[in-house]
Image 1: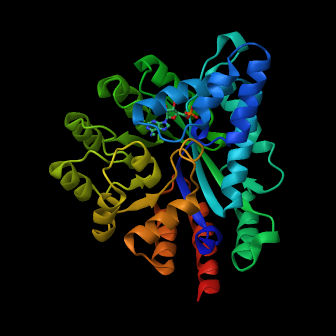
Image 2 (image 1 turned 60 degrees about the horizontal axis):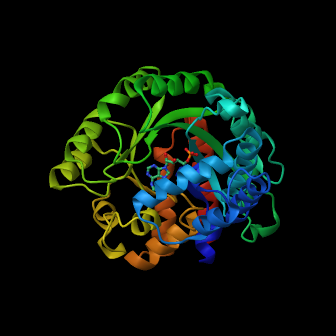
Image 3 (image 1 turned 90 degrees about the vertical axis):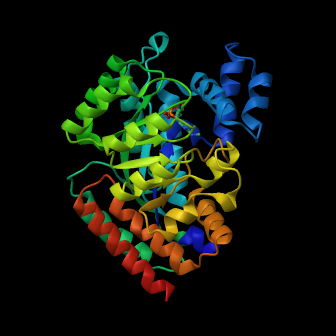
Length: 364
Ligand code: 6MZ
């Protein structure tokens, strides 16, 4: 586990509200309980439950959203989630979240994203670079490199690049989805780089989101789609035909979907623990990671919802290494290759390549 923690890592599939520390979630829920707004004893039980089916996970998200959707909570969880990833040597993080309206608290989709940005600004324990085209990459470059070359980096300050993706929830209308894309465009200068389509895969129609996704692409935003989380052959075909820059999951693919995916070379965000816990794949040995890895198809290991599934990116690397018999060198290469699939610019990619090269020297 030690080298899984100490090697630099890239994390590209993280839902903010799925990645909250248990202690924080309980803390926020207790505060609402004290105000008489929820029954804490009921909520505590749901939060601490471990095994959940995919549909139960979405019920949990509805509960989490009741507990977290105010400005100060969103700021707090953003700060903590980034700190947690940085602490396990994630050097580049793409954090996704669904902008939400909450009229009773004066929250708009814009003020929700502003609360997220506030969380990034509030981080002082690690160096965070989230504004594109600033001087930060250059400054961060030297500090990342010095970190990476330090074998015992437990005592040094951590550094991390963060970029944001705004998620469209499958329950949303076309108009609401377009509003999210407009917001993403407005927030580009603060590090919003793309759009994610997520939410309960049993809900909604591809044609509802397509206009917003096409608009996002026309405007130069990157797009990643949750694809094949349930068996829905027609939707999987439609999504692959759209040619998103990445997809997440790809669990319920059939032969013709694999063929299409492989010929289009679309990178896949693989979330092992999430897929096992939601029973989206029968067993870990049967996970499609193996086939994609052997086929040298672009893929990246991710956590999905580290809070909900009690995992970390280091743990996902450990599981992949032990289950599929991969060594430290292979896992390092897998992590490094993820740089090519990030939604940030070439300057950031170059800094990250140097970081990995420098860390590789300390491996040999
Ligand atoms: C699909 C998921 C998901 O956006 O409120 N989300 N969507 N499949 C998954 N796999 C288990 N995990 C999380 O984070 C929580 C939201 O992310 C999406 C759901 O829409 C969930 O409500 P944010 O920060």
